[in-house]
Length: 263
Length: 300
Image (cartoon, rainbow over all chains, first blue to last red; front, top):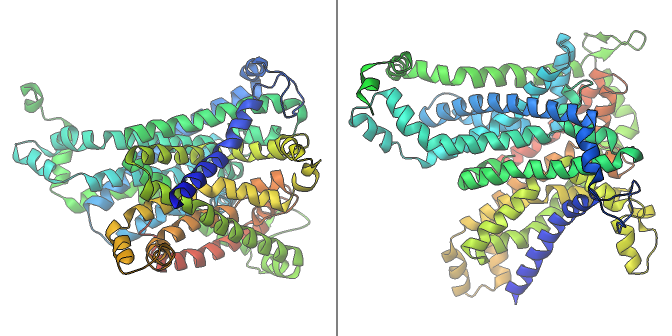
């Protein structure tokens, strides 16, 4: 009896989670400019319009550029930090994971407003660089959590075995340590990319007048004649934000879990 | 491994070997970049945020006066609207957290303790994907659903009720529902992880000693899963606390975030925006300290 109830509750909760995503997906195929439910006529026409829309293209290019750069920085910084914390004991070791999670555990407006004050304070021009710096800062923790989870699960004895068999430290890193970490690093990179690609709150405080894709959606969703294109971009965003996570989960299910809980 | 590689020690190999014999230097090399980045970019910015909060804007020239003043905080206390906004934000964040915990429990329990391994993996991905699905698009989807002649109106009409969207479309109720929706997966996943860790023998022992399921739940499951519950609540609470997109798009109310956003953007009053951003910092500092005491960080 209680099992049946649990099953029903689980089903309802999943329905609740997916219903809005499905509905916005359907709206992308609405042929009319007027957004009325149920939809009368379906078409692919707005996909073409969205594809050729200059604002969408510019925003898309900016989002990809930013996400790639932020991911690169986050992978480097997060991997270095995870090695340091896993391999050494030092003063302040416990604080590192706490410090890295802060940009995400604290509300986005705090990180955003802090960066905004600094940018104003130094008179730094707003631009792609300021967006990348903000994104890299909150993406580090995803990489750190992913890589350190893998390091903790990997026994150091395989490295010792490698050294005992005559490998030097570089060879041990290159042929033993790195291959065990590779999928965790790739998964982390995918998650960092997804996180950056989708972020809006910190971005609005660091972007100045530039528009990433989420900012473009935010600025255009109230304009009735832009709505069909916004619907298409929204559907594309859902798909694009889910694909990296799905791939990351396939690559490294255990570590993705660790990283997600700290998102 | 080919002999050619073994015979040709590259600079990388020498560097690795050299560092291996100097662990402190190795540690310094590993830590320099991440600690430098966070120290300068993140904590440096937070320090700037603090500094700005105690500066002020010259109303005539619009220039920031870099002199210590409590004017921003006096304004926050003297104008009752700001107190209302802070209380509203806190109340909604609390309601969202509690409702999310209640909704998340059954599905998390089913995933952790009832479902087979295969179903469990499938459910995990099914919760993970909406969590990562574009945040803004999820808010936008609700705006579309709640709009006049949208899905909500259509569904209500099936029950003979007309124009529900006029009352609920843009309101505090719809805002709360959207928050509950958006942060729900953030509560399900830590709860699931916590429930999965409870050894089955504990539940069996409780049953053997005569504990009915309600008693077992209250005396065994709940205390053991509390750290995970608090861990999940950090996200539901903190993310609601700092949001301004949801209030902006599905309500007519202002949140702490809206005040910060508008002061910074429309009014160009960075000092006041910085001062107001310290309100959620203070609230979260207290929340995180309590959460840490309850063991939430080990459950993260």
